[in-house]
Length: 304
Image (cartoon, rainbow, N blue to C red):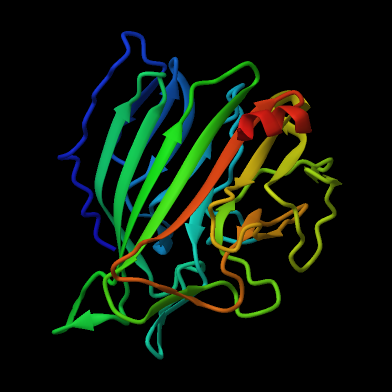
């Protein structure tokens, strides 16, 4: 995987005198801070473990509002898992399967453009453009991009005991008859995923109350709140994963795990869906990281 990331279009348009959200470019990627406190790190440079499981275009670490690292990268049980990531198991062009982005098999991404601005309300807006490639898709002997991903991440300043982060992922095929799909089984997992550090007392809840994870998908309309003693010192906190009502297939099914796995609003499931060359497939999710407790009433207010 070549790192074609070029920081030529970084636009720092600051409309507030004392903007809270800021950005720092490093050799590996982009560090986002909130009043000098670490918020998230977006990986632009390809990263591997002993030359395997190479990946970029994901978030790790994701920090809690108290500074706790909430995510994992290269976990021993699933070395292909990576922080906050969005990817699919099945990838087809016509009748040819050209890779497994989820498992990082025959899959490459090049972060070709990154842009950062701050808004009047102090939020940070990180925009990325990423090209997808595969050893199985070449023209005249050379790998060529078959999909363009444009992702916008809005990082809101901390309020009280929480911070909200919004994601909009736009996928535009560069080849006709391209399809993406989840795992080819009844689980159907893939799409937007969070690989969290999970405590023994992890608790899942949604608008209808407690959620019991199963081997297969479960339902929760709108969001899943993952809570417990997640923070340093065994203090309580949590991560809320929000499924936007504008998403295709809303409410999407959830793949949830109490240990050794990611948490995932699964789209599209087992059966692949087409990605257009003219109209992007748009997927929207949000994360709310918090310390202490966050009631359903408060979550509903944040959603509005």
